[in-house]
Length: 198
Length: 198
Image (cartoon, rainbow over all chains, first blue to last red):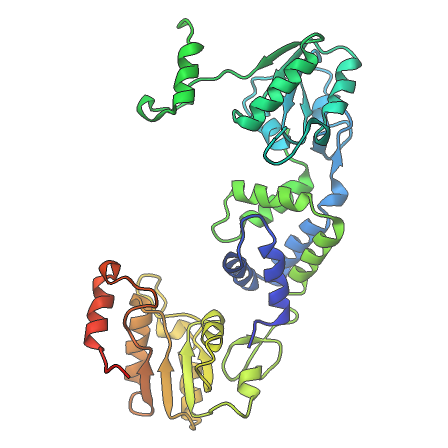
């Protein structure tokens, strides 16, 4: 005996989610089986309507309900600063700080030797067009502080340093850091970029 | 700026799955966003059609595509043995061993003092009706070896011991057990139920 076909189908779909194995998929499916028909239909609708209601902003390449996206369309934003992010998640994280008033550009990935992602696989050509249109004075690289992020930053710096001012996010101790447990690279950076107490 | 509404909706639905937090839901949603329309529709369909195609077998109370389920309908199965399981997952686990040829009964839960699940909250009334119909000679309790499983076993034993022979699964070392790391209860049981080498 096996599970009913309808349940098997759902388990198969759930197991395709990232890092969800057959056992977890089963647990999700049994949870869903206990929900009422309305909840399941609402979930089904949210899946079926996902793609149809999402556009890509032609200016910053972020996903959005509108094109241009609310940020690119907002005339009150500082239009001379362009913050380069890997993806929309990073963009939203930065927006939620309320610290930045400029525009964004979504790379859609980072250069990675290991995963064989070259500059041509991400939106660097589109970024060049964006810079060539003029108007941007500072490019802020807000990329992950890891091998891929650093590689991409070095590449972008080489490519654009003659046209715009390029900065990147500060490196140092995270909030709540315990010196004793900070890794060597972080500690080294924290020392190197130490600054006056204001 | 927030995520587009369609994406927010999906994240909310995914976050309702057991032990899925907002961050995991986001990761699932972004994975789904990269899939094509066909896959999403297939997933949506499997959700929408889940309930409609699943019945409960009126004899063993297992979920099934048919009523009675294939096991209860199978005349070649030994009809004098009834294996009591908590849920369909346990039933399928036992079936997959190929060791058991009798019938099943799904309790739909275990008695739990902590979670306030009494005998009336699970299918014990239905089990009494099943036993009273006659024909069952052995009731095999295949319940979890934990507080809830043991409580339920004691309760069922009291209730039915005058009508049928009641057995439960053997207790001892699991396959691959390392004596050194076996817990005391397991080791105690392994000693207590030691048997001749055949």
